[in-house]
Length: 258
Image (cartoon, rainbow, N blue to C red; front, side, top):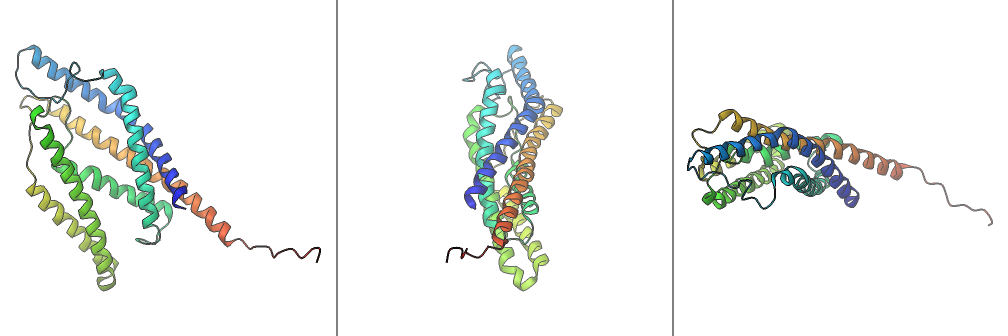
């Protein structure tokens, strides 16, 4: 059944990517354009900030391509990949980690994925628009972000393991509280150890920065919500069909002609 779940997960991811692309095109990309305009206006007035990892002139492709075909292609590939991995996680968790239905499990996993993959790393390193960030620190910022993401994933795996170990001794509720507490402690320690990076120009519009960060989280939230709901619906139909087929009475072999 894993193969059937896999292509359904990829399909759900592609659907989620299409919706997220529309959201990004209408909500996030205008903020990017405003940030680029801010950077260009400062360069035109002789301000030497040296912020911004790229500009329209330095970019290998035009902004129209970035906002159109480039954005759609990147989001589609990302959606298919995370949708496939989500389906494999669902296949592992179904019937093992929780005795709940397919749609409830898919929704729960999608919420956890959004928190672990999008929210927790953003608490330490929130997304920034162009004109924010020194070009010479891009490697440091990239490494620090992925370190935070990896720590969030590892903390989640450890929390799941801790809950499984303590469930028989403490009960499901107390074991869940202990697992959540362990996750928070691990994430807090890692966030304290990782370097603090704050390269927002003093005169950068606060409203623009806030709107861009909200839009970025909105894209991730829409992506994971769509994957959870769409994949849960498809997985539920598949499992129901498989269950009905397995439980259907089989007719005895024909004795005609004997």
